[in-house]
Amino acid sequence: QVQLVESGGGLVQAGGSLRLSCAASGRTFSMLAMGWLRQTPGKEREFVAAISWSGSRTYYADSVKGRFTVSRDNAKNTVYLQMNSLKPEDTAVYYCAASSTAIMATTTNEYDYWGQGTQVTVSS
Image (tube, one colour):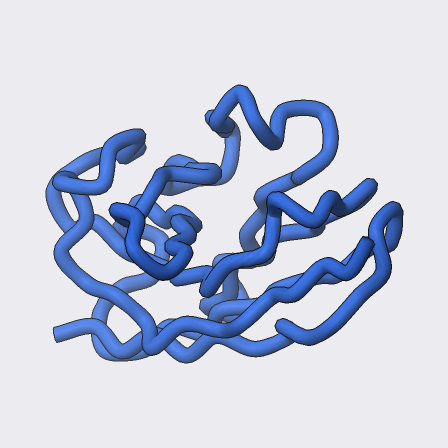
């Protein structure tokens, strides 16, 4: 089992920045592919960003490319999502997720562990 706990969400004005953190426990963190996904009411959960085991590879949804950066610190069992130039359409509940089978997971279905989510609200 893997436990994931997100933090860092909140309210920010458009153009601002936030950094989300996700602390993992329960399995060898360096062997988990990690990612961030988000969901708004009435919509399906959508992929945002992914990072490979070692952190050497990253992948982003087109909607956040150039604005968001995913990173990880395997010594701290933590993955981060730095969000810059935030837009109102980035408003969502953001979930940290882990995959125990993929080296890097770029689709929602590849993740088998999820955090509880953290709300990000961007005001215009």
